Length: 358
Image 1 (cartoon, rainbow, N blue to C red):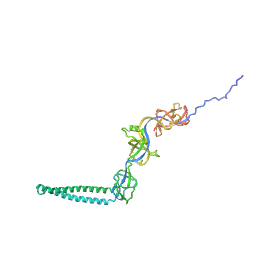
Image 2: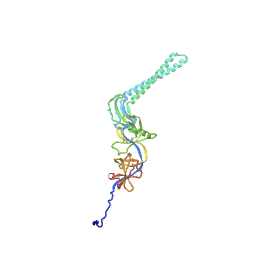
Image 3: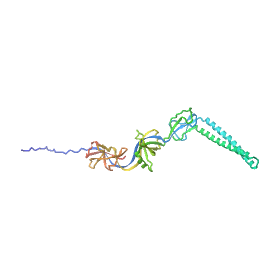
Image 4: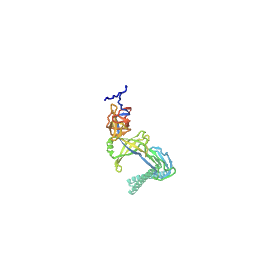
């Protein structure tokens, strides 16, 4: 039986299909110095807060500040009618002058009696009486001086001055009102430069914090929620509480900031990052290079022949959109965009390369 041959038309040949390349973006793994950080949230508090009250009773005659303005230590805030206290001071000064004059005469008489007693012209009893009278008047003069000092203090209390630098709040008593001694608060003053940031961290972080705090001043970065694009306010860790909050399992910490730009205000809630140290020569990649799979996290490594292979990784920490990945070495290239179209061994075409620096 004859076999029929298959004849191909001239010019035709069988072709092997070419593997399709996948366009991707890539980045190189680089070694950088990155911070070791702990994140939390906290609240801004006035470094010092003072409630202004009157120490004497009287009519509020003048207010020398505008609500919400910054005041300096010693600035005059309010005035209270001082006329009754001025009169009391003058009376005390008059009593002092009268008793000083009497003391002067009594001392002269005591000296005269002493001379007479030495010569035998007066008795011991007369001499003793003159000395006693002089001593009594001296004690009275000392009492008068104390009364004058106290009256002068009462007069000074009529001019209420700021005890600290800070921002004064709303006035709660208007001019013309009668103020009782230590009764109603006239206003409050909060010191905002420097200012304090109160925050907490889990108790298991305490040994790590104490380790890096030994002999060092730790930095604190503070941002306001919703304003993360702004430059963080830099602070210094000032205080670690002497006990753990057993109910919450946290330790309380304070940071202090000069707050020169007045970016922080008492009562604000803020995001807090405690910087423990700067770690050198750490491999970092853009965070978008890390993918999540059924077996965990992985990245696509670009091989010299422009094919890719997945490598399991574990992100140690993320800083400003970049991840610390110990399983990668400097100079290796990873895919940062286009991973959804990749499979192991896929051929790629590099469209863009981005920097991996944090």
